[in-house]
Length: 236
Image (cartoon, rainbow, N blue to C red; front, side, top):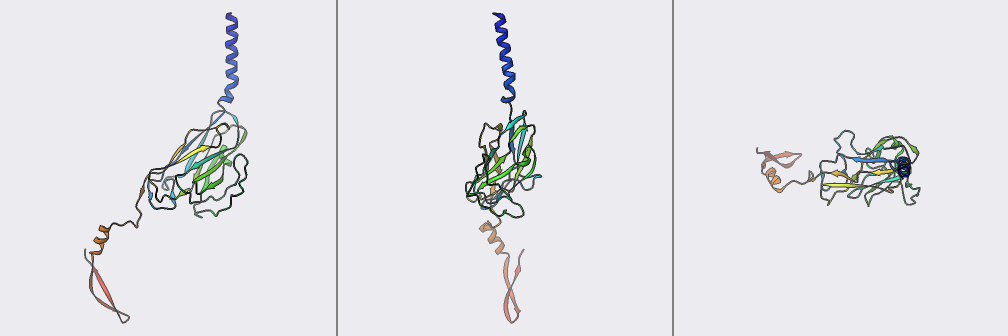
């Protein structure tokens, strides 16, 4: 009896060891972002990362837990408003191989700072933007496949701008995977993008306008090219 129990216990231990590599064969994905501290409340092209921070952009980090095969997977960012910037390139092919027939080319916008993937390393060196649904506010990024992945990797999504007119801060984006069974495990699902919204330069209060006007009083006339011109003096 004792012998049979010992053998059963040994078999269970062997089974656990045998299954361990597949059970923990994952790339753990975390997402980091320094949000824009404040954007103009009526902005049509608000930044989604702090432009003053070094290496700004939404950072995606994939940490290897164990060597494993990987299936190509879509990482989808959904922003809280219409996306108003466009990428410098995209593939129009989803991670599962679906080719998007209605995926038309759009010139990179803005030209000097378009949406793009920067600093891709290791596992994510070949990560690409598959497509952007501007009206829905989604950016679809393809994470690569691998027969036997042994690497970690990082990349940054840079240059994403959104229309915040009529929105209320703080604003967050969400992140999802097209599948949870491809050995990519997403740990971060909420990404802060804008902390506050404030008035723009055109939002001058009536009191300030009146104060400025009271400093300007009629003074005298100046003749310029035969036409009387009213001069003003500033009262401090």
